[in-house]
Length: 448
Image 1 (cartoon, rainbow, N blue to C red):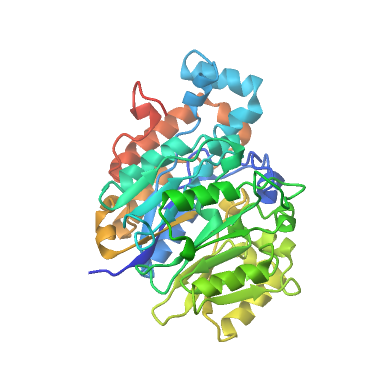
Image 2 (cartoon, one colour):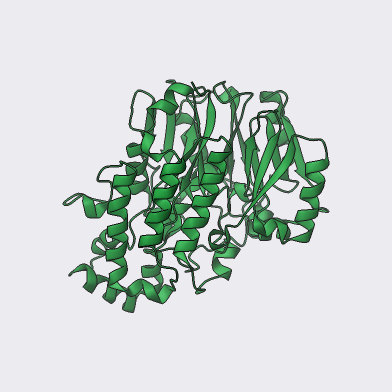
């Protein structure tokens, strides 16, 4: 019998992975616009990370990509004709938003939803609130499919509650678990849920001046209410507006936490001392590792994605940090990580992964996974076909190799053959992962 754990559900990179520069405020995304992508390499890099963590004994699940191009959105926008006619017309007349409707951004499943484990919620079930992602068109269209995918994996309503996205209005801008973490002694014990927002929509308060604040305080508060969280064990904090303007578009680009450890930059939060004091008062024994700007600048943190890392518990009570290769290639960051491992603190191991394809679009290890704390009964209630193991890894590797292109430029998205390739691949994937008919092309006559 396995015990309670924090499972990671990573997003499979989709076949239309490209560099379109769709995400204003994400400097890696915009900086690599129009570069040539390799969808096959991107998916294989993600699978390699999943398999490595599963081999280390972590519970690792797989979340499917979404169907792209999003033809149902184009039909809602008034385009008519065959699929091929619509693709050619929109690609020729509106190439920018057509490329956005081909985005493989659902691979960053840290933005799929916010998750509260059963030990924290009012009804004793694991609650998921699908993120509306309404700040960006290419992401705002993800919510309905995300909910269907989650329902196909977490099917048992006795254990799981999957909420629809909050209203699609800027007041409730919600970017999911990228702005949420949880502190606890063990995963099946009550914890402190920590929500970080970029700004408050209504009323006064500091806001970033250059880039948008994608998460609102109002959205975070709404999620806490619908999940039935105890206010005495919930903390809301504002991300520092200056770091948002420096390219820190989500909290998970400047801070990460797990169990009783918070690893963050000294400029992560507004009124940071008060934030850490409140967390410590509600979660006694919390250990905060604060990285000074003198050691790692915000610029280097964004360039390397040092904090967009995964903190993973080890059997000896310490933790390991999963970072992208870019950390090793940033001298100040790599020097800091060497000191961190040898410093006698809670983080004593660093694992480095090559995630270049994802990183060039603005997403690192933490972006690629949705964390779900589960007790033993809940783990058994998850669709078993999505758990990573030797057999699934081999099947998915072959699936990617057969169906994915090794070169994709934004101009290639107008090729109608790509849609056929995507649908063939996803139809097979739903069988591999035993998901049922979850995609629009499989659901004749239904809305996306």
